[in-house]
Length: 113
Picture 1: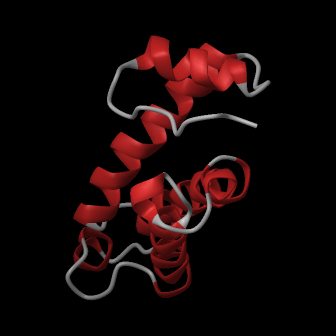
Picture 2: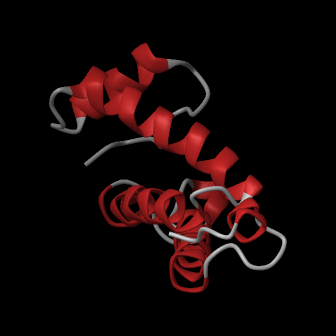
């Protein structure tokens, strides 16, 4: 069990080291994958492009984050807990079910996945 919440925004190397300390291997690849999902998934979700796919990827990442990392620190966000990732996981699941809606790029091009 970790003694302190990971410092986000420190870069891939420290994030990979944190993942390795938690027993996740290959840690650097997972750090890269998680960063890719967060960055590009967030952009795609904001645009409403490939909305359900992006939201599903984010929901999977956030679900794992809630129960294997943030949950170890309790509930409250200011203590590194699961409050915020759980909220965003639920929001992502809503997008998986409902899609991007009428203001999304998916809707404008007529292709909702």
